[in-house]
Image 1 (tube, rainbow, N blue to C red):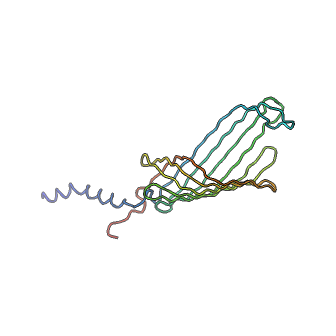
Image 2: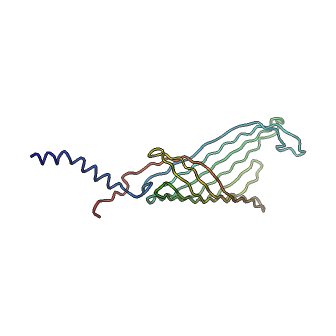
Image 3: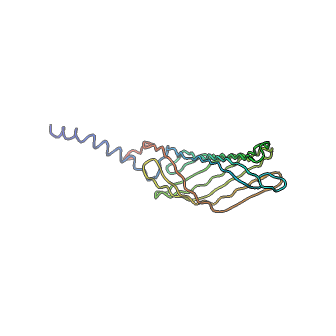
Length: 208
């Protein structure tokens, strides 16, 4: 009777131990988890410059800028995520010294896939490419291409959130009519990501 009672008392502990052991993937992030991140920024300021004057005269104006960036992904394998980058930028410039002049607006939108792979120590590599349009209120527009390849580190300050410094090499190309403008060089940034972790994804049974 004592042995049966002891076994009954230890049963929850044995089940928990078995359950925890089945979660022991050699992975930073498990298959089935979701990666969510983004930023929203904006500011307004006054300027005195040769904004859109044909004779080179100084004009007073006001600029308003807003930028929305989003990085969301899904872990199709342990430590390997695929996702979508979105980037939306808008700028409005108003010449306050000439009230009759219409505001000048420009907007660009970029979207494209990315892939990311994590090592066990938190280091990750990422590659992505986006295409988009750059539109101006005067009717002009250009085609955009943005490609990056980089390495970063995910510092998890708790189970679901991380701060991620990253060093990338970026290629950017803008094509307008017959003219092409391109740049290539290093890019340093810091991101903030949230991880919706799937703890019970693909539980491995002991003995298989």
